[in-house]
Image (cartoon, rainbow, N blue to C red; front, side, top):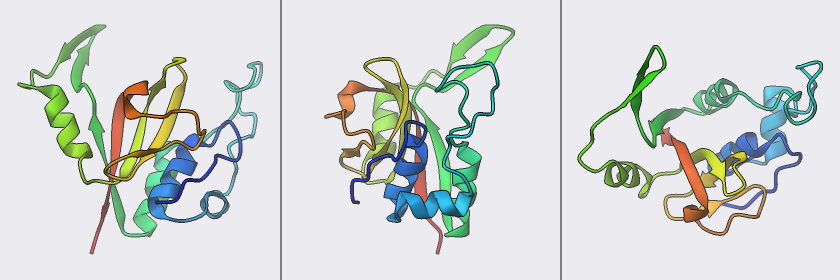
Length: 151
């Protein structure tokens, strides 16, 4: 996997998927048809006003390449009427790490500054499109989008 820099502040997700797919981020944005900068929420300020990228746009791009995307949640839970119940895994961290080991995909979560962010994972190490995270421990993982090549 080759490190790529996100071309704008709204493109960490598309850049992370591009790294995992081993294609230039510009090629992936061209395929999807936008760069994420369009203002779609009038009355809000950037970055809250900008389109960014939706996960479904990236799943569709992966499927066109015979690559399946599976979400692995860091802390799976059930929610009902404002209540949350976490699935009682014997060791949820061991479960989650077992999905990371040796698998390529995109991690979505929060940086130390509590900013929602996406980074690429090659099965052993992170590739941060913003270039400021140095280790996985600096990232609060919400979900891992595991890429699996379909033969």
